[in-house]
Length: 569
Image (cartoon, rainbow, N blue to C red):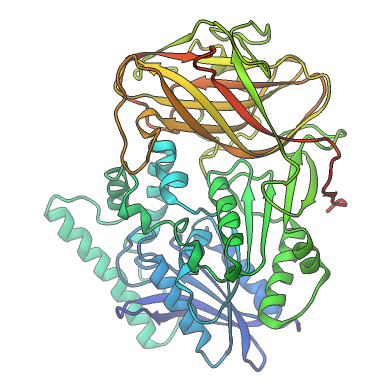
C-alpha cells in the first residue's frame, strides 16, 4: 500500500442507537478513498498519555492506506453518556463498526484491534455480528471478566481493582475545556460533556453519594461476588456460537488475562462460522507488545481479510495457527522470558502426555517450608496430612502485588518464591532433581483434598522451577475459594473439619526444565495484597494419602517430538 501522510478529524461524535455520541478521532490517508478501516476503543482517553500508543498505531496504519478510528468509550474522554464498565461495549462497538462500514470513505470492511481493555471491548462486540466486521487482532484480552478480571477463583482482586479504578477515573471525570479543534458544533458538544460531568459531581456530593464515576463501578463489581447476569454482560465464553470473525489472539504467559485469551482462541476455533483463528502465547506481562514479527503478522492479517492480499506470514499462520514461546528452550540464555518460539497446529498440543504427580510426605531436602514435602509419580499410601495456621491479620501474608496483576509493579515473571516458602505459611511439594529435560506446555490442574476449621478458605497454588542453586522461580498459579469448588454461580459454604475435593485450574504455561532442576508446587491460603484475604482465622490441612491423593496433572510434551522451531525473529 502507498505510504501517505494522514488527515485527522478530531472528535467526530459517532451516534449510538440511544442517541449518545462517542468522541472518535478518524485518521484518513491523504488520497482518494474508499479505504479499508480499523477501529480501536478504550476508556483511557485517546488524548492522554495511555492513548498515545493507539495514536501511534493509527498513524502507522493510515500511512499504509487504512482509515483508522480511535474512540473514547462511553462516558470517558470526550464521549457523551455515563461509564458503565464494559456493560455498554458490546452494543457501542457494534454500532460503531456498522457506522464505519457505511461511511463513503470506507470500503465496507472493518477490522478491530486492541490491547487490554481495547481487546476486551473488541471481543464483546464480536458475537453481535456487526455488518462489515472482517477481522480482529486481540492482544491480552479476556473471555470472562469475572474469572479473569475481578473474582478469579471466587477471590476479589483487591489491589488491581483499586488501582484500575483510579486509572479510569482520570478519564471519566470532568476535564478542562482545552481547545481540541473542530467546528463550533464539535467544540460545544465537547464542552457540554464536561459541564454535565461537573454537574453530576455536584449532585452526587450533595446527595452524599460520593464520586459518580469509576468508584461506582468498583463498588458495583464488589457487590457481585458470584457469577451472575452482571458478569454475563461482560463475558463472551457463552456466546461463541455467535462469533463469525477471523481473529489473532495474542496472550501473555504472565498476564492476568492469559486464560481468557487462550479460551477465546479455543472457543472461536470450535465454531466453523468464525473462520481461521491464530493463537500466539508469548512470555509477556501486561504491557504493549512491540515484537516486530507480531506487528508484521498483524499487518498481513488485516491486509488479507480487508483487502484480499496474500502473504507468506498469513500462509504460515494458517498452516501453524498456534505459536508458543517455550521458556528455557534456549540453552544459551537463562531467564523467565528467555527461550524459543515453536509453531504448532492446535491447542492443547495433540501429542501432550498428561502426567500426574502426587503430593507426598517424604522430605525433599530442598525447601525451608514447614513440611518440605515431595512430588512423585508414585501414588501415596498411608500418610499424615500437612497443616497450615492462617491469620488474615498477619503482617507477613504470602503473596505478591504484581504477578498477573496488570499494570501494578513489574508483574515479576520468575520471581523467587523462597521468602514465602520459608515464612511458615506455605507448604511445598518438590520433585527430585530431574534426570532429563522436562517440557510442560498446556493447561494444568491441581486436585486438592483439604479441610479448614472455618466456614470458607482460599486455596492458592504456585508452580515453580527450582534451580540447582535453590532459587524457586514462579512459573504460573491457580486460585480457588473453597465455597466456589462446585460453582461460581451458587457458592456453598464448607463444613469445618470436613475434607473436600477441589479442582484448581492452574493457568497454562510453556516451560522446559533442564536436567538437574526440580519442579515444585507451593500451597498457601493467601496471596496478598493481590487478593483480598479470607477473613477467618483458621487451621487448614492438606491431605495426601490413599483415600485423598492430592496431585497435579501436568501437560508433558516429549522432547523434540514435533512442532517446528521458528528461526530467530
